[in-house]
Image 1: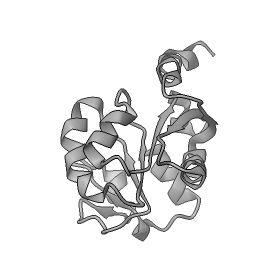
Image 2 (image 1 turned 90 degrees about the vertical axis):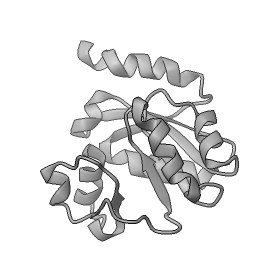
Image 3 (image 1 turned 45 degrees about the vertical axis):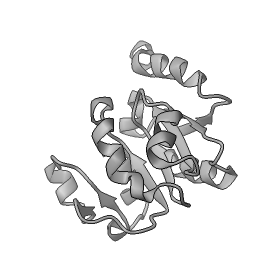
Length: 159
């Protein structure tokens, strides 16, 4: 919700956003976004923001949007790019991101890494979107994401 709030506060029209949430908050219900409605056929971006234990249910529902030009941007912890490619198709541009806790107040740092299908424009778009909650750092390889995940979970508590 911090990302969505940042985007809406930044001028993104609620009518251009679709959200699937089985338990929407009152705040989300009041934003004016399309809530639990049919998704558009070819969205520019699909943000995957689910708990790791829900990923097995979430990805199959999005598979029809894969293998095209839709960028999949994931802020879900613990799911490697290969899992997205297996579920969505090898031609799908995917950017995996890991925001840290201060992102909830717009002061976070988010690390990103894209798959081979994610070009410069995809990474730029992901960086622009994630910039709503703080700074963005591009990683050189997905293996670095494990270290980022460990620091993101506990590092801000020591600052």
